[in-house]
Length: 423
Image 1 (tube, one colour):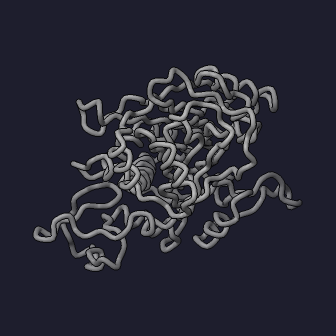
Image 2 (image 1 turned 180 degrees about the horizontal axis):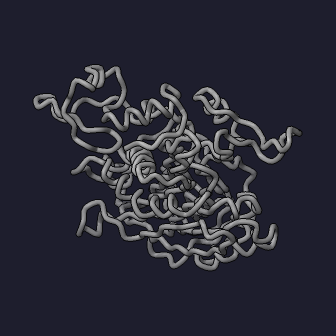
Image 3 (image 1 turned 30 degrees about the vertical axis):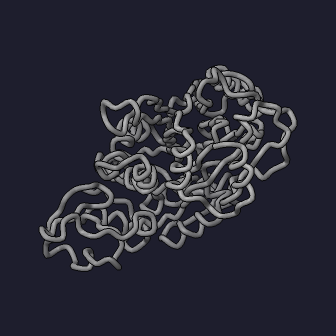
């Protein structure tokens, strides 16, 4: 994208469709993928943090031109089994929910929905194991200049652009801070309150009862209740060709450092050193109170060994992405080919905990055969007397098998929220 186009697009408040952005790049010959560089660091207090780094995934196996990268943090609680299970199974469950034969544009457009299906499927599969641990998840997919982030819990992913603007790409699902989640949990049958010792005043953060979990969304936690949902907040953004840095970390980092502090303390350093410095700064600020895990990912313009340095003079801009807005650094002294410093386009954002709103309304897989495919677990199922005909109606929501429909109803408070193990 040339400078004239970048300056012109800055003035537009309308979201630009993903296909238009990709098409514009192709017409202008800007098809070079960025380089993805990463580093990881951490210290264990309880040993319940896990991470996933897969920089060499391929949409089409054997075709390097279809490569994409995956980075994730799993912060377990009440044991490690949920975190390990999610690390080993979540990616495959997400990819299985994307239709076969997609081109890149279709794949990116299908990804937010596939993330929702993959998170829910992983949660159902783990609950069938009969274990009670849980885990937060922050899951990041990078394909070219497009970043897609899905999250449940209180791990976090921030984006630091070359304009010095720090943006939060996740939403914290802590009951203490999230009013909407408190209202959703109570409406679904849960109770929210502080720990009450010996009949006195409540102490500590707000928790969901039964179970006493501080979070409203996670994978696992079978003993808490189905109103603790695995449906992730999903955000998809597109960087300009100036690149940017992602900092993905568990709450052991964010309880000690604000987002802008984490970004500022490691600017100008390679990703590996940056991750170590973020952990060091968190420990200096708070000590080792919890597991601290950090993954830093640099999305670097093609042909550059490192990210260009962030300008010393930072703009006083909002710390969250604003739909349709483009941020531009007018003080940059970098060459013209990096004139679009700090430009970020928001493509998609949705955080609803209602599965029907996240998966949409599907038709049967094959209307002639009567076979339909579950929108969550991707199982093919023929209609039976136990399945209402409304499941095939376009007005009834996503096509779900009997197991996934029970899960959906329980999460929405339509069935008893008393914890049960599905078989």
